[in-house]
Length: 325
Image (cartoon, rainbow, N blue to C red; front, side):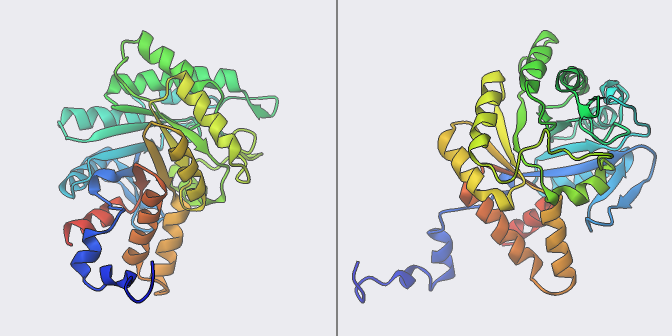
């Protein structure tokens, strides 16, 4: 290339041409919208640390699902806030647990949504950890039994995808075996394979009422300083039967998304988590940034890094931006 014959700006002057040659495109089909469902009626509690996000009782949850569909978003990820909690998360395995009830109502009303059910115990335990605590630590092998039971219960309720987020070793194999034995061989597993112990989760713990007590989650979630370990997590989960894998969080882990995408041939999902959302909202409310310009830049960077699908609390706003182009 030699200047002045080669001028890279030639492809940038015309906005239509800029779109024509753009190599990373965002579509509403790329988006999954996380939602929080809680007991009661006519409840719409705004989450103080996540403006614009709500804990919804099933009646309002269904109304919001219809709003999601109207915007062209086709997939949701459901988290539950139970009425009661226990020591092991067994309450999440019951057929009348909050997420199961919400999924059944989606099916009863024949809403055309892909329903992804998060499988974890942190929202359902009194101690806020992702499993059963024995001798001051989360017991791996007892926990995966509960997770498998929860997964089967969610599949029976009508979940399309099971998404274990606990980071216990061996949980994908245990869940896959339990689903298959129960006749759910067609239900895929989206594994939170690469989930870091991150400070970006803070607002989510307000939303799901799942903050851990007594000790942190660093004994089971990944050290944020590590990258090579991510390949071991992905390899193990794929060998155990995972159909898709997730990297979480997204924004500070674009390098991990890129590396995983380069070395796997399965769909890679990135979760743009609550802390990422809340930082943008706070800066926007202070008029420090233009919210949707920042959102589109960040989401595009996640897609450009290699994510096939993005879980984001901005999904509906992104859909509005794309639909109004």
